[in-house]
Length: 246
Image 1 (cartoon, rainbow, N blue to C red):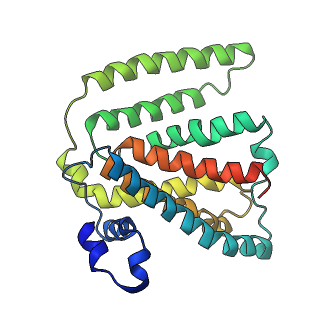
Image 2 (image 1 turned 90 degrees about the vertical axis):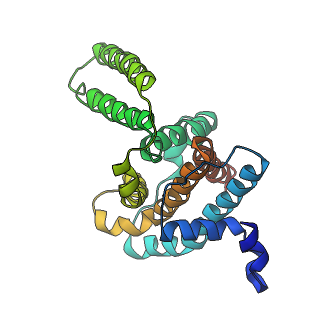
């Protein structure tokens, strides 16, 4: 990064070098040979990625707000996000959901067998919970609790027994997997809107898709702490500004 920052001139010298690192990674995604250590320099670089995420959001929000008004798309209502109070909103939106979403969409992105097992267990547990939707009454919650406990035990055993780094096929497929994870992360946020006209909603998940590309880069370069921190902090900023009425 030092060579990049010292060789630039003009206005580009004020642009964080990590932005260029990310752009080059997007052009040619590859799994890093070694992960960057968790230290002060890594924290600064992750902070630069957070600034990049916010910059994209700010650049897109005006255009998307205009488009929403033009085509009659109802944007997510803040009242729906805060119906359980500000404390629950912040805990869920700035901590719980980011951790869960990062596990599902990017926890496995390094290709390590242990994290691939975690992904499979999460998908299987979710499928099992969906299968209980026809169970009515108080039994529903008891069955859900039993299923979650069972998968927690099974998943813990499988993860404990898993060993090894990323397989060769994963490294070859990594570019496609990187872009697919970001695209799926973006598409998952379509559920925030009225699904009557789903194709018109695609532009509205561009910010989340770009964020997915940034979070994925942080995941493979620094580890899970980085993409969770980015996701949680960006959510906290959005929710915090909404809570104070900005």
